[in-house]
Length: 389
Ligand code: NZQ
Ligand code: ZN
Image (tube, rainbow, N blue to C red; front, top):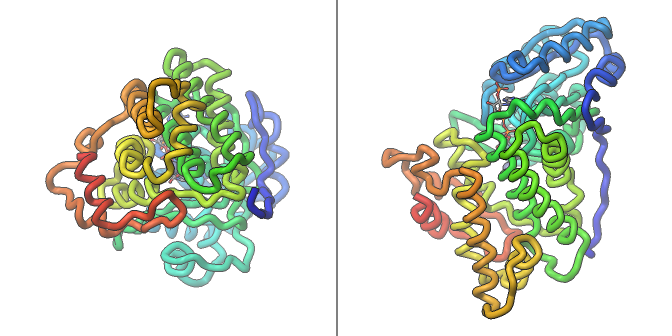
């Protein structure tokens, strides 16, 4: 095992009924003014909004609403939220939604108290957060990003066409409430793309050194098998509590830093997807589903032993009668088959990318990650995009 330091400051309340049980009490710790932030309105249709506002009312909170946070949240939306928070003397931001709402609110929690330009000082490049952001609480409504238990926030700057994430421990939510029944209403296409995002986070960590036995890779294999099993079960029955609750916690476990301890980590697929998102506003998990198999066909020979392990321990493929290279490749093809099985797109065309999109421009704008089995070049990324098309 490599050396590490670990802390996670988010107190997490998990399970059916947790919002009703804890929110009123929790919201009272920070002051009287709560900014209730949410997305495009799913919370109003599935009863979550009603349950949350009842709890806040019970606690005697003044509620200021901030709605309409869209997928791939923009810097403009962050500034709008920060202005509202300042004008209303907000004491607690309560983010109710998925990764987009949670991420936008993390950035708002900084922008609301910081005098400079947070994009320039903290997202365009990493900065040092030497001040306290506004306290943030999150209520998760869709499993996928794992944003509830880390300081990561992915923001899109529409002007410069850059979508990028930074992880500041100071932005960790003070508390996270996770009721799996809130995810029952997530439509199947969003559930599977969120599910694939979970798988992607685990693979981006797993497919990197160290390759000798380590706790992280062992946990990652169990998590990957779990995501595959639970997605299949939740597709069959969207109200399968066992499957939905497992997916919700698998999502958190993938991104609460535990499996990352001591690992180099790749995340090149995320770099590529983020720029695809910045140019086309595509769905995050669906974009990753298109990219992963093609990317892995490019690099599996550079991390052969791990890809062999993946084939055997995650996909239950027998090594018998296969060369090492064939075994590794069979694992990648099993991943591609699974993506097809759960109905995610396999090509950029299916993702909605058309001829008018300048793939060369997007490829040239991708960050080159250094933690994977082989460092990409912009030329190879363009090749990957062309093969995905
Ligand atoms: O906006 P509403 O109406 O609420 O609908 C949302 C949205 O359309 C819907 N939804 C959420 N909960 C629902 C529901 N519909 C019915 N019932 C419910 N209970 O789901 C749609 C997608 O929501 P969104 O928050 O955009 O999805 P997701 O959680 O996948 O977040 C994606 C964003 O997070 C970033 C992505 O890049 C993207 O911007 N990421 C954040 C990370 C982090 N902070 O650590 C890491 C990830 O790798 C990722 O990059
Ligand atoms: Zn992701």
